[in-house]
Amino acid sequence: MRQVPRARAEFIAGARAFAPLSMSIIPFGVVCGAAASSAGMTPLQASAMSWVIFAGSAQIAATQLFASGAPLLVIVATAAIVNLRFLMYASSLATHFRTQNRRWQALIAYLLTDQAFGLCIVHATQHPDRQPDLRWFYLGVAGATWMCWQVATIAGILLGSLVPASWSLDFIVPLTFIAMVVPLLGDRAMRLAAATGGLASVLLVMPLKLNLIAAALIGVAAGVAADRLWART
Amino acid sequence: MSSVSGEAAGELFVWSMICAIGVATFVIRFAPLALLARLELPTWLTRALRYVPPAVMAAIIAPPLFFADGTPTIEPDLARIAAATLAALVAWRTRSTLWTVVLGMLALWGLQALSG
Image (cartoon, rainbow over all chains, first blue to last red; front, side):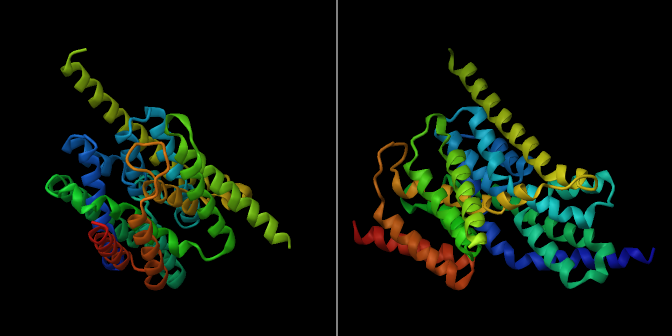
């Protein structure tokens, strides 16, 4: 019984840690919902994107490909590649959560986001003593992120059709991605991966809307190559 | 084909898309948690995964700056490119999504108003 108040305190600490990040999640979610609904999805489908998939970047990429008439397999493969970073996050979190039962692991996996991963790792490093209750902190962050995302996308679905296209609000999508990518560009190899990926996505002419997949793979290859080359010199 | 069955086919397409991406995403998130107690990701894969976010995000950002909707010819949208560049500088200095979005949108509206 002694465990319960600590679990609750960790849960609340997690939700609090997320609060400032809602300022970036809300506009992204609103745009995501508006984009899905203006791409021709029904309100139910547009909101299902958010609770079935629950991954903003993949939702945006899939929505754009859907709107441009890409084949199903290409859309699914592109979304999977956009989400490959979760392999990295989940394997890093596995060191903390490998003793949890399957149900907890499934919940942790479903709720995994950039925000939940980032805050959880920072918390685990700063408070190694609270490791036994780390799952509750994670649930606080991730649960708040989930709620925020659902409400924001529904708001986007409802409000999206009211905003005239001349406001260019679709530009919020690249802007939020710029805000996410710029802090990652700390070293040369990361900058090269971004520059190559961006350039390839513009210059490549691929059938079936395979541009994003091809550009991503070329960008990753450039980053890895630079990493190996520069590590030796 | 009647429009009703066309709509139904469209519905089926969207639901298949949502479910397939949902399953793929869950597997990607769940597999390392469930399996890594026994096996570890190979080093080359961990190293490669580090470069996925910058490569993917740049590839999502760039095309709308250079293509008018759906056309295969490169047609730089100067207002958007300038606003995106300014937003990147803001993101670098402030590390704030909110400021990046607000100043980026204001810049775009300003430039669009100037160019008529």
